[in-house]
Image (cartoon, rainbow, N blue to C red; front, top):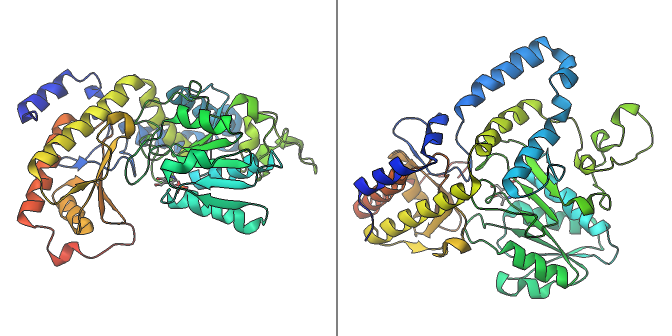
Length: 408
Ligand SMILES: Cc1ncc(COP(=O)(O)O)c(C=O)c1O
């Protein structure tokens, strides 16, 4: 039996993570289920950014590179993210965007071994992953991109393969068994690059236990780093000295301030930096990451699963005309639930007009992300009610809801 509203309120009252909700500046009356696209604003961020801007930039000026430790921010925030994903502090660096980091890691993995010439990925992977891989192949006649459906994917891996996978699929929410994929691909002589954009801050990750070698992830989704927050790159320590970044900017140099004409890569992960880090964006990201450091990641992951379960159960009980595209098994999915509906875009617009913010993805998918730090059981309960009302009343069938914006 699906829980009642009173039972959801009791769940919220007993939730050890409930206190985190108040640490976010969420608007009244909004049920925000799009933290898998753009995370909510932590309350601490605005004040911290004001301090960084006024005191560190305004007063400290260029001295702040040392005095405010700006130069260490990519490694410092990286080390904090490492704690969330089961990595060591010298294995994660914050830099650039997810797309740029994918480029760096794919190129580095390919050029580390002359026998490697194929990027193996799945059709329907996130577009930037596919486009970056195809762009590399377009620039280098020696590289080809091979897409194989996930059922057959690991069996297609071999010694010449760099496998590129998104751990939690952006549209369907399906989750790979990271340790199992790593093990099969490694056994076949290949290497895996994981995109953790929909995993970090949402599901339990233990990169060391899974023997993950290479990964990237987003800073602005569940990590709540703000629009366009820099991303992170993970390189297992053993590999760091063997990989070279293709973007040999000055901050990837062993001694950037020697201003030498000759390039020598930094000995460790710093070789995956490129240019000057975006300090203001890093400051915002650090506020988002710091909140996670106060939470128990096992509780975070378990709550994400419970919220998804509750929402799914209620939607299936109350709604007709939706086709579930996310696995029912919590172990086989991330922290969002997606449904197909022939008028998905308009349905989502009608929901947003009622204060329930999720998003739409082609083809005809509505997506509801549950961010365990700020979403509650009553959010999940109420969102299902509103969805049921929109579907039953055909409220979506209004010309105002059919017009597509540039960002969908
Ligand atoms: C799986 C995945 N990878 C990458 C990206 C985007 O990367 P970038 O931050 O470079 O735009 C997204 C954005 O939604 C994503 O879902």
